[in-house]
Length: 420
View 1 (cartoon, rainbow, N blue to C red):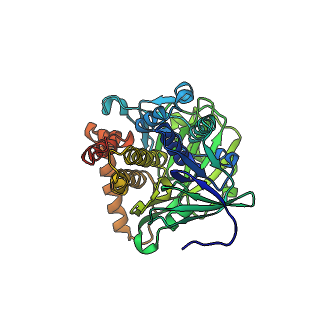
View 2: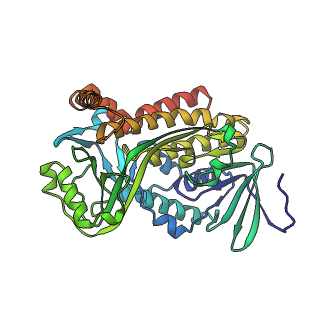
């Protein structure tokens, strides 16, 4: 039981949201639109959050969700609609026409930082409360009817009473750790390489993303806008950012891009460089009593396939609908279904990101002998031949890339659960 002799400032809300990244902000905005009060607690400053560089490919499901939240005006003006993307297999380019292969679905290129900025401004405009730069965040009694969160802000200790708690505080946050270990099943795959990313104020080398599989390793040519580019290289986990000068990065990227693409590459000083390790991770269940895990607090996907933010948005969509049903009296116990429904989409996205990573990266596995390595190479060659040279195979990639299969499955499951 929680007890203290120190006088605390008392707060009360319906939903306590831990984390002011895009997941927490989007959930807060959707709930506010439904008249459900919420308070967000965040350990970092708003400036720090906006300084983080993240992916920027939004599925149609997320685009629609931002419209529902009323924060899509700037995205519609500045975002770039992509009808497809390319996979370059040992220099040969294959275009996946996602619009044609999915009966009209597309994706939107709009940076996660910009999504976060739009959500921050929307929250400020409605006067919703956010406690940035909070410390000592602790979740209490999530399995009771009276959960609460304690935290410290500017030397003042607060107790936030609430009905429910949404943990949107990422992989290293307190939310998942607040669920007892014996209640958690955690599934993880650590990949033996990382992505070295470089951001530059240079025009993108192509209008659509190009995923490159080469003998030298994976590369990705991406974009943030018509004047800002984001590029990635597969590197060993032992590499450090300091090992890579801008010149070394550009030289290696040119070797991994198809020759005709490399000739068009415009280089320039980096704005940001970083190395991100790759992992697949899922925590089951995604809830404990009145505590719900959302986004990276519950799952991590490799960036191959751009599912991270989209998967978090799917969690947000599910939870906001269930909370609405709970509060409007339509289905008082609706929130009990959150984990079951959310995990359906999670495992679809996890599998696709795992598959894309396996297909497009070069592996050096010391646990396989020469014959096993050659056999695996043949399997992978056959896999890519089917998915890149046959319409049926391209369609499998396309419908998963735009989220069609996952969202269709989710909608069917929601209908069965009386969610929609």
